[in-house]
Image (cartoon, rainbow, N blue to C red; front, side, top):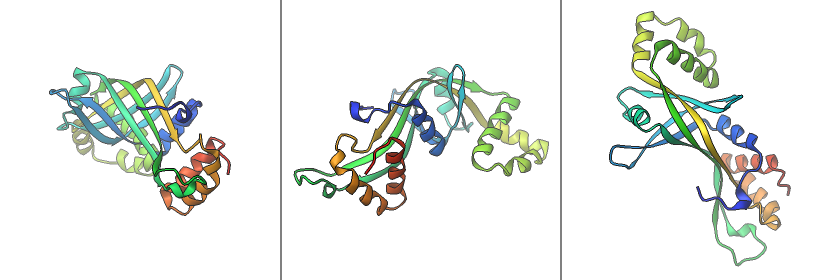
Length: 205
């Protein structure tokens, strides 16, 4: 993605934080016509000694898993909080509106997981991310039903081979920070989320 140097995150841990807080990603591959094929899905992040790994799955009728098998390199995109920024935050009136946001793009290499045991382990990790109490219900399902559900998906590991983390919060305009913070705090959940990221990168008022 377009990455002006002032918006490039220097701390790799910030990217992991964003992916965990906003796990609903866009997975982008190329279809048979060379066009982008996009699936929106939750991904589980694991930090391993050899690097970052993303785990996910799609329904078997979704052609995306076939594209991953044929062309394993893909992109997983995560979008954090984002909001319109009015030029009213600037002391200098010769400014224009913009949109602030936090995003991570991961270039990945995919490996399919097609065995039932591997898919079950992956699902339990996703359950642990989003609704841990459901794990007991999943374990208690009839074996025939559980196997039918597992047969209906294709799971995959996505090895992160490159990563970009963009934090666009007017870092290069410190004179705007106090008024930007005030506007964001009044702007609802998205704006408040941006203020939390201002705090994370030490962007004081």
